[in-house]
Image (tube, rainbow, N blue to C red):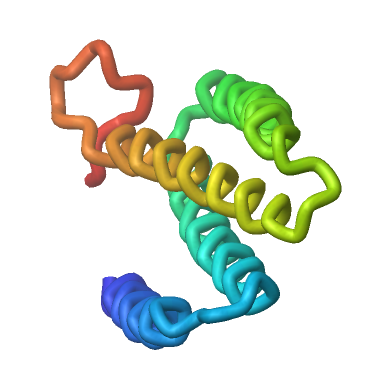
Length: 131
């Protein structure tokens, strides 16, 4: 539990520093870099949440969760390729792609985090409650 709190605190502090730097980004290269860093931060959080969900899941749900995650990644990547295709070849394309990836990844992380909040007796939730 302490490790989770420390990780969350570190993420908040690093994301605040990143947010400060990114708020002052003035070139496209800086904005692209900030968008990429923001995506990397939320992707790391997603991977941690996914690993926690895998640990909590029973064997049949674990395999389904892995399969769902692989499918979700394919859809996310295809959606973001489409979203950023309007800026193909432009200097802004990496930022648009990273922002799309970050937004969709944050949504997925929130969904997986909700699965970790299952309550006893909730048959619509595939993971057992924290014990």
